[in-house]
Length: 360
Image (cartoon, rainbow, N blue to C red; front, side, top):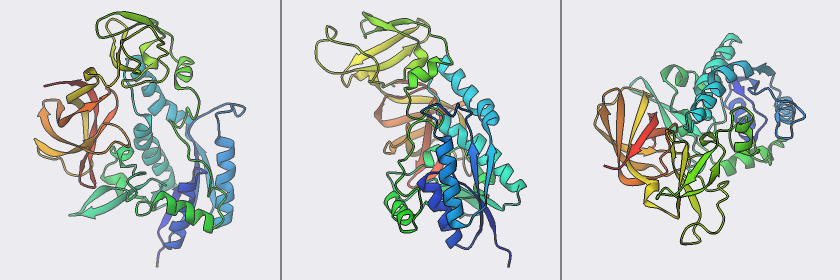
């Protein structure tokens, strides 16, 4: 009987390491592939690619799996990073991880794996794939704290039909336990955080190496100038850290938050405390993508406007070339450029890109 051949994206982290082990235990013919998606000076203290490759090789050797290596940096630059910079230049806040999954992991990597004779690819994402009425469904991972379906909403039927998520049914604690029990070098390796190509470095400083500074005024809701900013691209809605607004402003000791980016006047609007200007009950979104069949609108469902947010009840209505989403409760820090992802209980229906927000 033909064994299905699966090539797993082995990143050198604990999740993909355990995904590889579980696939072997499930009887697949398994190979692995280490993707380099960012060309970085290896002397850069933030670049972990060399260590990650070393760890991936150790895991592959331990499990007796062939490890392929490939550099997708050019694809990543063209399909993900260039868009990331363009959006920031417009004063928006994109989500490169969503685009990386669509363009790199489940397109370039998938095509490359198929060219190597794979039937399917696998990753260490915490999500599940099921099938109903001949349609593939993307479901949330059982570990609510780690569920990554939000980042996968741009996948379609073709990608889901050729993908496996071995960690979808287990918790992060269980993953570390399995890695430890099987003496994998990654068992207690710290999870990577932040955007893959930025790592732990200061986000604003990183952006300033690619985008020019465009100083302007930071103003409060009354238009009073508080200080200067270095450029709207370096801030995001809801941001608290990095504003460096000291004493002498405001009537209380509450922290300041970014409420809006006024692109026309190059002003950063900030408010103090949990201010009403941070909340909106309606948004418009573009580029709607449905994972399965196109849903009839209006549709009552739930949605997340950011990763790790609890799903919020809402209604999607047709808005011509876009959609309008009306929330049952006003949402804090709705951010243009970010993704809104829709759910029906534990099924991810799809998502769109937030364009504007308002109160109706």
